[in-house]
Amino acid sequence: MDVLAGLFPLLKVLAAFAAMLTGIRLRLGLPLSILAGSILLAALFALSPLTWIATAARALADPQTLSLAGIVACIMTLSDLLEKTGQNDRLMRAVAPLITNPALRITFFPALIGLLPMPGGAHFSAPMVKSVGDPLSVSAKDQALINYWFRHLWEPCWPLYPGVIMAASLANVSLVSIMAITWPAAVGCVAIGWFFFLRQNLKTTAALPHVTGKTDYKTLLKLGLPLLTAILGAVGAEAAFAALKSDLPFEIGVMIALAAASLVCALQNRVPAREILYELKNRHTLHMLAVIAAIFIFKDVLGATGVAETLASSAGKEAVLVTAAVIVPFLVGLVSGITMAYVGAAFPLLMAVIPMTQSGPDMAWITLAILCGYTGVLISPLHICFIFSCSYYHVDLASAWRRLVAPCAIFLAASLVYVALL
Image (cartoon, rainbow, N blue to C red; front, side):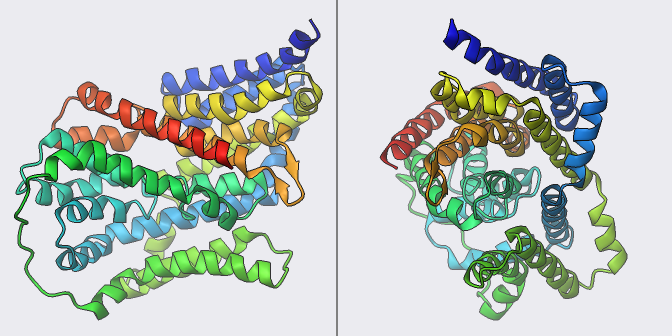
């Protein structure tokens, strides 16, 4: 009975998660669904409406919320500038003559686009996969799956993804520490993708489509400069802050690097300042900012209920850990198809009960949550990139989705083994 009493608060939290998932399923939108979950959570723990409003106001004014919102706005601005100026397309065409291996050529473009977390990026890389896949006699369904799978291989570990940044922020650990422990996921995705989607298609291929033109390395460097500025600047700034033992949060360095990358792209393409400002307030950017606001409101409401302390001291702490690190991220990722959703839902609860080490929170549990959530996102039939890929190649969504089940199951099993070894 004591165990059941200790788990009763967990059932209330799961009810709030269920409300969020229902909202997402009913297409209320991610921000409204998360807000609904926070309101239900407050009601279940008898918090008054005024308490909820005060908690939400504090969450929105929190420096952590504001800094993360700034980073996401900068990421979205850079992605939109690179796409709308055509610089992404020019960069990929400049790189193409360097690639002679068929497997590399058909996967390179979605992987390159995957370095930038642009919404629906698989739709952008689909024509390039088709231009390589058709001469190699790769079926439309396999092209769709190749485009989708290799577009997302960086998502668990790449420092420009808002989900990775938010996980680091909520866990109060550095981006470098998350990258250092999750990078094998990208290697695993490549191996699994090769086995399921490339091996049979390219086994008997001898010829490659000819790519005209020579590679101008100076032009290649110029076209890749914004991306290099963002990546090296973000990682370099965080390393510099750590070396100088600065009290500045790592988000400041990331924001500066992304703003510098956007400026480089704007100067290279002579983009007027008013267009850069317009990118800061477009629909995709505002939606992402609303998601961040809703997630941090949910996090602070969860803290205000006191449920974290109750669960942490209950006999069911191990059950709570498994729920927060495995079940919640996977289910939220599966239902939403959005990385930010599972991070925002699972990490506030996870960080309340996670075991602590001398250097901080146990990174094995953080890694487990990221990889389980990522698997859910990857296998989600609601993932916008999956829908875009199937639509572009005119393939049946259900039959293509069934081809994802086995590789995602193997990835999840490998993830559990990897985390157990940690």
